[in-house]
Amino acid sequence: MENVEIQRLLKQAANEIKSLRQQNQLMSARLEVYDTMKLMLNTEPNYPRSGAMHPDIVYELEKANDLLESTR
Image (tube, rainbow, N blue to C red; front, side, top):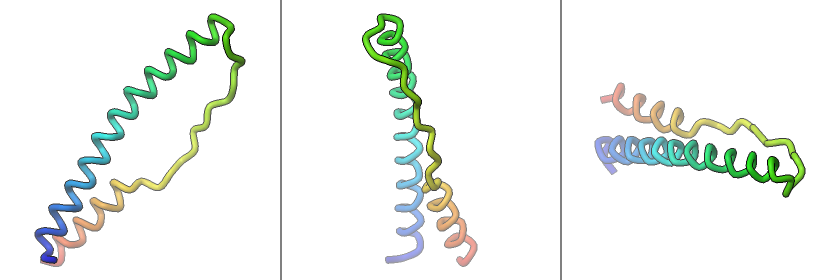
């Protein structure tokens, strides 16, 4: 596979993940409103939310792409 094709795939993967992150943020906001309404109506007890950190795959993809561009 040529570098150009690999770069195209890396960019495509990074863009797809960024798009999914935006969709995730929207869904997260909707879930937050839903959870708040459930709490206001006393239909569910309050529980802690998980905010665990995960490796940033977009950063890794873009870093690999930059490395390929610099070796051209």
